[in-house]
Every structure is written in structure tokens, then in C-alpha cells.
Length: 318
Image (cartoon, rainbow, N blue to C red; front, side, top):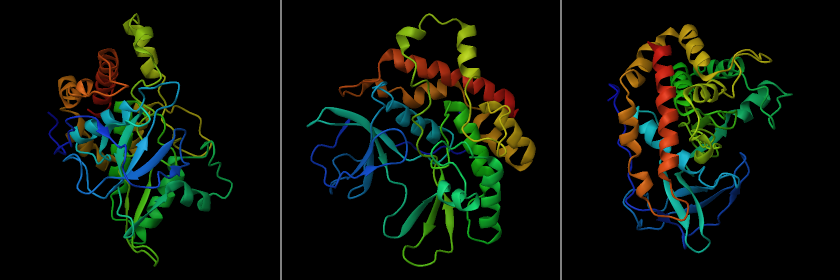
């Protein structure tokens, strides 16, 4: 097991059925996949759920019906290495047959407010291309984060946060940590806030080989798997306009060089992790019954990718 403290995962005994949950089912425009919200009933129907709390019901891309499982796997992996990832559960709506990841809201509405990094980066760089995110750079991120840190507003160690985010994304193969997939949770609503923390690592579904169909990868040899993993790219560029190597592992190495103080924490979190740990953390998911199940083939594909990416990550951090 990894030596860093793990976070106990909330384990569901069965798929969550949100049919009849109260709420306006508001649709959220950020991202490529449809996301709607609803409120957990009070009392909660399952012990892992928070009564009266808002949840996102995040569906898959229609081309990849089982994509939503990636959010749940990412949550379990985050718990395993002690990183804050919003709890995510396998869910469906029995009245419509829709399946999705049910993701816990990560800030207290009415007492806190979320500001996506894209909002601040647009102010920092007025011509920021928010639609494509091609301007999203670590250089601009650092400028923003340093300003908030030096002012005393930011309570999070932003170097450790980004080091952990890059390593986590390298492990799950996340290619979509764009400017609206991280941000700040500010204390207070309706008055000037003076303290903020960085968000949990949310929106992790564009990862874990979601776009690969298991029946087409069964015949892949080791070289083909290596090619697939090596093509993975992080969304963020290191500097504005820089189109050089954006591979997950190169970003981890670069972060460790630029911020050497993060190295001990990355090693504590990831150096002792094993493929067996990863398998154990998600072993129950294929047993959950809902119309779009995690098949044994999808389970095996995810574990194969996690294992290979873990090996590369450990080589990079040691």
C-alpha cells in the first residue's frame, strides 16, 4: 500500500436510483457531456449519500455508453493515494433508463462559491480562448496562483496541488484538466471573500481508455499498448504558445524539477502503490447491477492501463 494516508472510500452496496429525487435537474454547460443536478432525499436512501445535498448526474458521451465508470474509478484511485476527489457513485434513473456517475457537490452552497480558473485566466489574458482552451498554460496558472498566495487569500499549497494533479492525471491518463476543470472555492457569498482553497480534482471522465472498446484492444500486443499510453497528453501547456512535449510523464518530471519541494510528497503517495492495490480498490464495481454495467472486459482494460501508467509514473518520481 502507498505510505501516504489514504482516504476511506465511500463504498456503495448497490447502484443508486435517482428516480423521484427532488430538484430542478438544472443542466450545466461546462464540458462536453451532459450534467444535471438533483438533491439527495432526506433521509438519504443509502448510507454513503449526504441527505439534502446536491449531486451531479453526469452521463457518458453517447458514443461511449460506459464512460461514466471512469469517474467512479478515478474517485476510488484518488482515495487510495490520499487525494481529494469528489465522491462518485454508479447511478441510474429507473424511470428513464439513463445511467451516469452521481458526483457529490464539493462546496457548501450558500456559504461558499466556486470560481473556475477559466474566469480568472480570462481576466489575466483578455484574448484567452476559453472555447478551445489552447491558451491554458502552467505559466499563466502560476502567475494567478502566486498572486492569490502572496495576497494571503489562498490557503492551499498550490505547488503541491499541481504536482499531485499532474501525477494523478498521469496515472489515470486524464487528457482534460482544462481551465474549467479546476478552480477556487471562496469562503462567503455576497461579500468580498478573503480566503480560498483550490478545488478537489473533479471531472475525471476523459481518462482510463474510455474511448477504446475492449473487443478491439484484446488483440493488442505490448508494443501497441505502449504506443497508446505514450500518446497521452495533458491539456495544460507549460508556457503560453509552447507546443513542446506535453506527455503526462514529461509534465510530472518538469514539475519536480521546477518545484523540488513536491518530490517527497509524490513519492509518499505513489512510490509504494501496486497494481494489486489498484485492483482491490475497484474490485466491487463489476458487481453493481444497472443497465450499463462495468463488464469484466472494461475492468481488465482499465487495470491494464492503470498498471502500465503506474510503472511509468514510478520510474519518473524515483
